[in-house]
Length: 311
Image (spheres, rainbow, N blue to C red):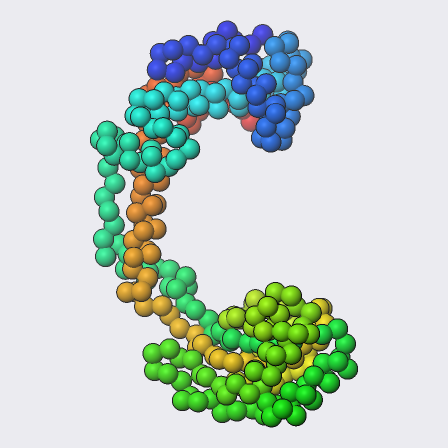
């Protein structure tokens, strides 16, 4: 038989019928279906088997008891959440920002804003996050057959765009981009807008945008990173067909400076501190406000129901 009282939230008893209703509601949810709530005979006596506890004492166990214990945790926590939202004036309990604002306003949490030293330490510990690899801006034409690709390659070359052109200005001191003559790219773009099988890039005259290592597969990526800016490359085969391509610009690998990342890091650190402050507040409130019948306590989370048996 299920206990008549599941637990107490701020001194108010939560009884078994409330848990039955909670389980019925869970049965229609994805989480409930995943753990098999629909298989329970809600309110009916459970089939009980004996299991051996870690202390060598046999105890009753059933799937229903296990699921009721799991659901009781959710029910008691939900009841407390509702009470706290009403007490603090949180209109939307799903809004994390509203909880932070209400808790700070009530003086129940205090979050110190991170400073420059915190941000710099985070930056130095996570430099890999702020490294940008070499990237190349490429334009391509995709067709189904190699012979068709060869025909278009000859047309591009015949229009004067098939030669490799030296980069103009080699590289700008601030940007690190090598700008190539646009002969091949212009002709290839005209063809791509009319004949390319790649619908996404066809609307952009074959422009693939900035490509980094690992974004494309196999021979196509290798051709892009082996090409001289302004040079027509191909035909190159991929699982989608045959490509002609031109690299229009190169962006060298670089490390974003701290000054550029500073505000982004400060925002992340502040969000982390808010989440941790709310997590600790919630743990305290559970311990203070929720109680369960003697012998049913969770071994780690006081107040919440524990496992029906221990290994």
